[in-house]
Image 1 (spheres, rainbow, N blue to C red):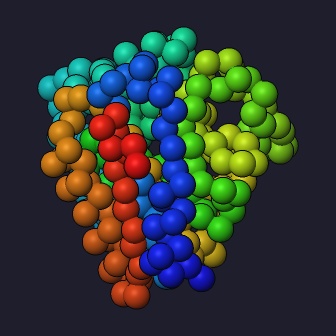
Image 2 (cartoon, helix red, strand yellow):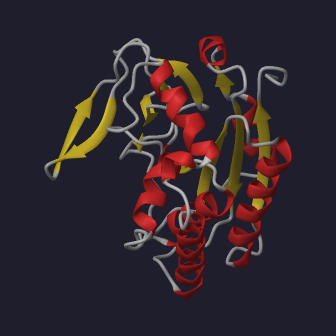
Length: 242
C-alpha cells in the first residue's frame, strides 16, 4: 500500500531527458500515481464509457480522416522526428481512433477507463501497474541496449529499441516504446492491479487546460469504483522539470 507521500515521492523521481525536449520543446507529460483502486474485469460502467468513446470517435471522424485530427498530426510529426514511420507504428491515440468504428478492445476496468478518456479528450494515455515498477519513470532517447519484454506469436520475448528511439523506462528496462506506441508486458495493468501510474502525453496544439481536464476526468472515473482512492499528480515540461 502506498500513502500519498510515497506516491508523490515516486512522481518526484520521474524525469524527462533534455534530448526529448530538444526533439519537441512543446512536449508535456502529466503523470498520475494512484493507490486504493478496486481491481476487476470489464464491467457495465466501463462498457458504458467505452460506448460513449466509440460514439465520440465516430462523430469526430464523420467529416475528416484520423490524420487530420490536430493532436494526431502533431504526434505523427514527433514520430518522424526520431525516425519512426507513423504509418507503421501509430501513436496510441491514433490506434484507438482507428479501432473505434469496429469496436474498442475490452481489456479490464482500468484499461477500459483510460482508453475511453484518451479518445474523449484526444490525448495519448497509458496505464501501468505501479507495483511492477523498479524505480521512477524516465523518458529518454534509447541507446538500443534497454530490454523490452513483449509477446510475439504467443511467446514472451525480449526486444530492444532502436538507438535514438524515445522510450519510457525504469531501472529494469523499457516500459513503453516509441513514446506511446506499445507498452511492456511486465508493467501492464491487470485485473488485480490496485496501484497504477497513468501517463498523458501532450504536444501543441493541446493546451495545459485541456490536459488537466483530461486528468480530472480520468481521476473522477477511477474514483467512482474506488472511493478511497489516493492520488498524486505531476506535470513535467521544459519549464517545470522539478
